[in-house]
Amino acid sequence: MFIRRLVSFVILSLSICTSAGLFGQTLRVAYKENPPFYQFTDKNGESQGLNVEIIKAIAQNSGDVLIFFPKERLSECLELLESGKVDIVLGVSSAANGDFSATMETSTSTLSVMADKEFAKLYASKLVKDYTVSFEYNTANTAIIPSFLASEFYVTGNQLELLKNNLIGRGDVMICDKECMLYILRQQGIEDNYTNIQNNIGVIGYTMIVKPGNTTLLRSLNEGIMGLRVDGTYEKIISSWVIEEDNLSQKWLIIIEIVFITLAFFVLGVAIYVYVSTGIRKYLRREVALKTVELDKQVFQLEKEKGLRDGMIQRSPLGMALLDTNGHVMSINPSACRLTGLKSVDVKTSIRTMPLFGEIFATHDTMKYPIEDETIRIMGKDNLVRSYRYSIRRIVEGDTQSDILMTLEDITVDEEKKLATIEREKNRILNQMMAGIAHEVKNPLTGIRNFAQLIPTCYTDPDFMENFTKLVPQEVDRISRLIESLMHYAR
Image 1 (cartoon, helix red, strand yellow):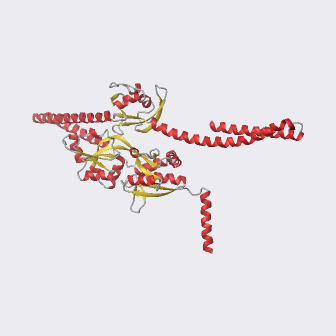
Image 2 (tube, one colour):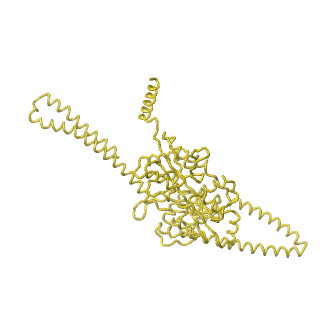
Image 3 (spheres, helix red, strand yellow):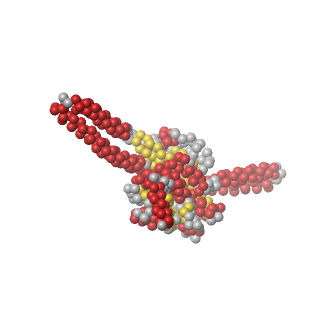
């Protein structure tokens, strides 16, 4: 008897707490395991990763309980979401959202080209004529792939498979998620064996998706993401997972500086010996000739790399402009011309004089790059406001003398879809309020009508006239207050 009473008391307490809102809802979250960076299951069976930490922080703020469902493939996660067995799928590439409703991006990464250092030397010297390229499905932009003159291309399911391909000789060059691959290389202790061939050739975004029509959950997740960004929690989570890559350009600058200092001492020593021996002068001439040949080869290599880079810019579907340190156009692709409405742009034109690009460029301090995935709304020549997403980066990070790459994308359609969803929700609430107000107005109008019908027969009745003069103004005031409430909501 005591146990039954105790169980009944616990059940009653839980019911009261739930009805009072002390416990949040239970959310079922599916995600594709691997690679161990965005979302994975550790040795203890706990869900970990950058995106897992973000949704855990959102749930902690809202009082929700999370149940994780790790799966080997993304298709399994989407099937669970479609059947209603889970509420959210975590860490989905923006390119793979399909017909589901996606939140704002929870994390982004840059797309880079990496290879082991031995192959990178051969690649830089153009001694490799037959090589292979591998990339993960739904990451590398299809416009980038043809720029690689490779013999074969391999498509993988995740970044771990991408690295495994490289280790077994399938995919000499990897087009990879930069932050994720750096994390994997460091976990495996082989980060010193790899280097970037090309950096920042694209951007990868990851979101959470919910079933279409689940606007309540979608809005709650978006508000949670914005809350993390506002209170600084988002930056703390990002910094705890993203590994800062060693600045390779700085390393090379140090090496070059050491080489030049060494060369300076060498030349000084040779200059001293020149006065002593004619043979040493001949030796110096030979050395200078050899160095000249090497420098010519390096200049030729740099020119070819520049040609490859310019080719990638021209083929990109994003509007892209390559600028020098003074903000003058060095290269601009057709997509950028279409966005600005210009047929062509002359080299050395100041970016500040161009539509769209110039307005955006003028709003930022050139000493504070990179600027990643900012949005802006601009009035066009057709008097319509359009939304754009843009980024401004230096080709060599941290080098204020490096060229600048500016990208621009028209996201007006996406923004209009978001605004349309908000407007539909607002109209739904307004319709509900209108129905309620119509019902509330009907009652006092009925009373006024009844009094009006009785006036011809009862206007000499003092009680009737007293009630009439008292109740009718009250009902009119009631209607007035309802109308004022509606106008206040409309404003």
